[in-house]
Amino acid sequence: MARHHLLPLLLLLLLPLLASAAATGDEAHLSAVIGDTGLAFAKDVLIGEAVRSLTPLRLPGAEKAFHVPFLGGIRAAVSNITLFHLDVGDDSVVGLGDSALVVVVSGITANISMAWSYSYYSWYFPVEISDSGTASILVQGMEVGTTMEIKNYNGSLALNATQCGCSVKDLVISLDGGASWFYQGFINAFEDHIRAAVEKVIPENIIGSTSKLDSLLQGLPRSVSLDNVTALNMTFVNDPQYGNSSIEFDISGLFTSTVAKTSNLQKHPQLSLSCGGASNMLLLSLDEDVFNSALEAYFKAGSMHWVVDKVPDQSLLNTAGWKFIIPRLYWNYPNDDMVLNISMTSSPLMRITSEKIGATINADMIIDVLHGTETVPVACISVVVSASGVVEASGDKVYGTVGLDDFSLSLKWSKIGNFHMSLIQGVIRVFLNTVCMPYLNSHLGNGYILPVVHDFTLKDVHVVTSTEQLMLCSDITFANASRLAALPVL
Image (tube, rainbow, N blue to C red; front, side):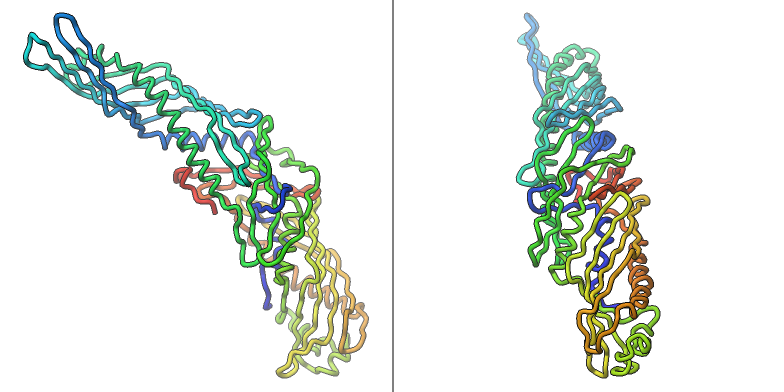
């Protein structure tokens, strides 16, 4: 249909479909809010990953020696102590402090296996008596609590487990093998050791896992190249803001150009974060400056250029079709084909309201005549287009539609004499309504899957717009297909 740079042309309407965020400068232009249902989801995911990382878990062994008067010495030992199963249940809560996240899991049961050995020696009996076997341990009423701080560290998120504790209510040790019934009392003497080992090793491993998650967060890219023109600088601004039942993360939120400097757009003073009364796990709020910064980056890179050489009514691109509109064009170049060379003269400006997303586009349209082997520019028309569209969501896809609101024309220069814009206004309106808008809508109507972290899926996404903001509200599902520390970010 046309020779063109597709991405810049569609950017006006594709940008609201991105669920990614970018940044430059020190002001926040994008906010991500995790609500109470989102925190509960994150808690369940983290607990599930913690259980997988803690099982199996090796605990230190121990040995005890007893001396019985007139009889001799007794040595008992436990080894190969392994916690191989954890049952968390549903008794868990997540709470928010002034600057920390608190997770408490109660009513945990665990299963532990171990080996035991026993030996008896005496001066009266020259032969040592020994026995060994295995044992199973049921841990009941275990409670684990951890306090985690999330801070902004040089534009990245840093996670630190400031406190982590574990308490065990009951242990039931059952021996197997040998004359286990005879040695039960000796083995019970290791109950305090096993309890202390569980209460020490589990917090240590949770803190170690938190360090891995911290490395994952700090390893998230701060800048992601969208193409050879624009890049996303994923820099966080300030520390997370803790509410009564939500956490807000602020990101500077502007696209940057890899080839030209963009303006330092200023964020409006207040962000009104709301999903229209719905309770969702995740809310992404994008300031309109995010979109305008991307448009500016593409404009300054010289990418907003479109050459149209094919249209549904091909007579529009032949001078014969203009015979009665601009007679001199036909007289000078009879029956010659034409192309429309369209370039933006300034960065398009997007405006977001509660009703729609609007844009104003300023462009020059040069009429080129293909005369023999030459391409002859014959006139340049300035076009100002006002368009608006809406963004809708279905499942994990978002869709867009756009329509023409109004346009104006003015003649910048001409080699075929002056002609009134009213003469060609009808033709240009047909071109915009039958070529430009349907072409954009054919792409926007296919839908775009929102990019998320691998193994996570956005569910029931819906779009809310307000003054200068576009918000994506969503729930999240997790496939549990891999460990959290190994999740790649797309």
